[in-house]
Amino acid sequence: MGAAAQLPKHVNIVEVGPRDGLQNERVRLTVAQKVRLVDDLTAAGIRDIEVGSFVHPKWIPQMADTAAVFDSIRRDPDVNYWALVPNMRGLESALASTVSHVAVFLSSSETHNMRNINRTIAESTEIIREVVDAARSEGCTVRGYISTVFGCPYEGDVDFDRVLSIGASLLDMGVSQLSIGDTTGMGTPLQVRDGCARAIEEFGTEALALHLHDTRGLALANALMALEVGVTVLDASIGGMGGCPYAPGASGNVGTEDVVNMLDASGVETGIDIAALLRISRQLELDCGATLNSRYYRYSQAGAV
Ligand code: HMG
Ligand code: MG
Image 1 (cartoon, rainbow, N blue to C red):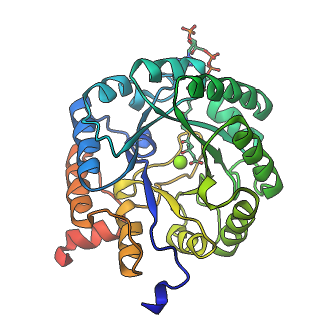
Image 2: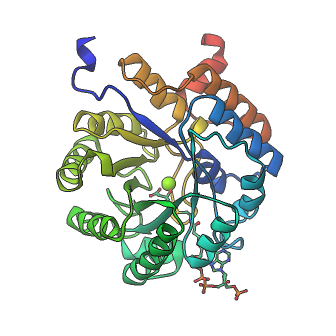
């Protein structure tokens, strides 16, 4: 029990698989398959689910049917169902689908921001300001992603002061939580520990989430370091699906099963049923016709769980 002494008692997992995972899968799931995925994640005990995005369908065809998915999911009143939006057009679509939890996003490196949303960081900041204002006036809660915070695939090192200054401006606009993204898994454990400690010092624990991709296999080590300095919200993707289409080399997000298994083993509560997660991953593998990479899921498939 002593091993859990420096870790938080409870960690909230934000499940991003239906958006960050599926946006990068070659196979496109049907609306019914996506709806089952979200409903099963709800039943597994996840309290925050990113259902999809309202972006340009030419840029991300996998998300073209997000409105239809929102129309059919079972909405548990204890669960927040998030939609990612890049601009006012996306917000309007989200509101038409009675979305109440909206995520905005921009990058801390210019080149990635341009490749991802075709705007400079300054332009994105102004677009996001308008989106946050409008969303909040409609009663929405808004989350803000900052991408490439521990390194950019185009520009290399990213100055963390820049991340902090973008974070401060998002919070100033009324974003309730920042999710700092290691978009291509370039972060290393000590770097992530120091970055998260600085972000918590600046913004407080409540305002911070960490979004890890597992490109180089360091996501769990990075997550653990972050938890030790006070992070209590982790984004994860069922089966370890995911990536960013505009970040070469970005592989999946850290797998939800892997995070929950690590937390279960460390005495940290998540409220999530890991056996249910494994069943969801199995279904997803069948639906996608692709192999999922989360380590705990692969281990379970070897007949060990
Ligand atoms: P653009 O081409 O500059 O758009 O793309 P525009 O404003 O010039 O408009 C062009 C056309 O797109 C217009 O239509 C608009 O109506 C339409 P037209 O008049 O030509 O018929 N349009 C839209 N259509 C549907 N939905 C919209 C929308 N907005 C404009 N929301 C844009 C700019 C942002 C739209 C485009 O670049 C885009 O959709 N990008 C999506 C990028 C994306 O989804 N990336 C992945 C998510 S981010 C991520 O994965 C990172 C994260 O996980 C964190 C991490 O890992 O670090 C969050
Ligand atoms: Mg991501």
